[in-house]
Length: 222
Image 1 (cartoon, one colour):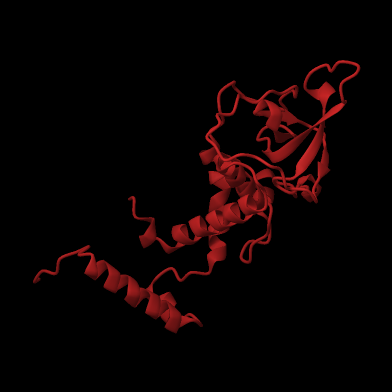
Image 2: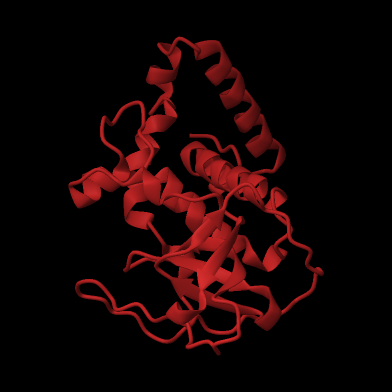
């Protein structure tokens, strides 16, 4: 436990997630505190892309139907959300407000948006996405985000509560379907017969030397 560097599959998956989050965050000026929304979106994307060893996507394996790719939007892009889906606007007020798209809802069909002027996270089912515009000016600080506000009725067996979502536990079940795509030998014998056996042997030697240098074990006489 607590040594993911000794687990090649876990280490590579963590690297993939971090690389995708870093790439998405670099395309917008959202605060770094939104990294968990980016991570949720990465998990959603990985769940609907195919793998080499499994013909179906993890989403299709779990839900029994193909995902709708048209539902995907550019993370961090601007969006125009109608006011009447949130609050009843004054007759002279604009009918929509400009927000930033930050994620997908878990249990209903809808999206999460960050409304900068009020520092709030809003949710709505429909919006006009400006996917070619991901540039907004924000100051880097430690603002706390208010609870999401929603007018959407849950779909089928919803158990939504009024507390912050447990974002880090999202899609763990589907993650198991994707690990088979890493093409990593399961044991020493498999590594020897792998087309890239020389690479795997070098990696093993480096790992063994690292553990020896860090005194992970102590040699004893049998």
